[in-house]
Amino acid sequence: MTTEFRFAVNVTPKPGILDPQGRAVESSLGHLGIDAVSAVRVGRRVELTVAADGESAARAVVERLASELLSNPLIEAFAIEAIGATSSTVGAPG
Amino acid sequence: MTTEFRFAVNVTPKPGILDPQGRAVESSLGHLGIDAVSAVRVGRRVELTVAADGESAARAVVERLASELLSNPLIEAFAIEAIGATSSTVGAPG
Image (cartoon, rainbow over all chains, first blue to last red; front, side, top):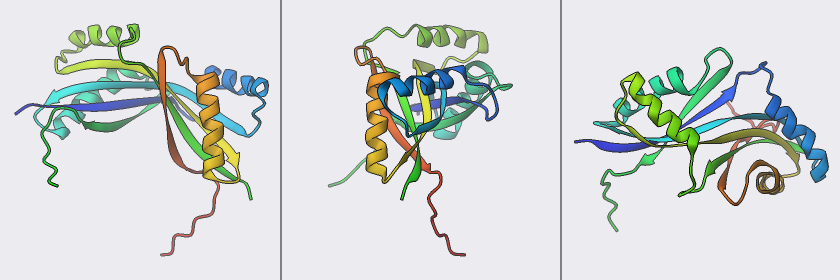
């Protein structure tokens, strides 16, 4: 039986890698009168649905996609987050 | 006492809003031989550190920043995620 799983892939610049978008956010903070924010890093978040027989098979597809298409392994790290099975039937009595 | 809290702001295109980056990812899937992936949405993930007296004060700063600087409320939704206090001292015996 095939179930659809929803995942998010969070792609962030590796530590030490220049992050111009993060610097741009930091330099905008003064205009908003916010001075307590630091260490801003800007990355991407990709949400997607995978149809697979089980969560481990689905996660394997996402891992391949994250490393081959969604991130640049030289400068970016990624983390995979399960955000729920979208079409499995889970009984919740009561 | 001021503690530093680390948050992530996940910014995603609202449902129904055109997502050209998501379409681009979907059309690349065929080249990788992946056919079980659908409903791809591409957004941003901003990670930042806030110095505040408590988590609720820190979260209020992040909410303001997310709505005024990090997202476009017409076409994007955001979700705030706490990813741990970075400099509080938490005792962990053993």
